Image (tube, rainbow over all chains, first blue to last red; front, side):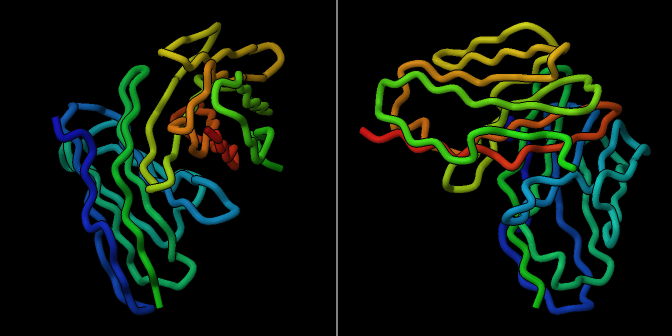
Length: 110
Length: 107
């Protein structure tokens, strides 16, 4: 099993650009989620999904979109990047009492 | 107000010492999670528990639902245990995180 994979590892965007952070898992987990981690703020939930076709907002959803067309994939879209979205982004999947995190994507918006 | 409070923020220990990290929360939860984040940034889930106690190797996690409190214990600490330990709580598919405890274990 590859676990949870994320691409890219690093990304630099200009303000106003859009992009998609990719996340995939091969464990057939129903629950997937996206978090951002900022110094002094800790981890915060952006969006989550409890299965294909079902998504919902977390604590800090503004400026981000998600979709879940398959169990395996849960991409996060930045519609119009802003410097406030500079952060490290983690994707995770969970089933019963197992949770796995991806390696993270470090995003800088200039 | 943060739903999850951890203490201490920073902890330095000598190799072999018994370590305790505490977590208090203020909401009704489905589960409490302990995570470990290494200096390289990767996050590993250590425990997910909703009652009682779990043990994995030298790590023990306990939770008291009535007092809304959990502890993470590390026995016979080792320099490789140096990391940030994060407490998180989940309910209704939502999740909130503590600020983390930075543990340094010196040889």
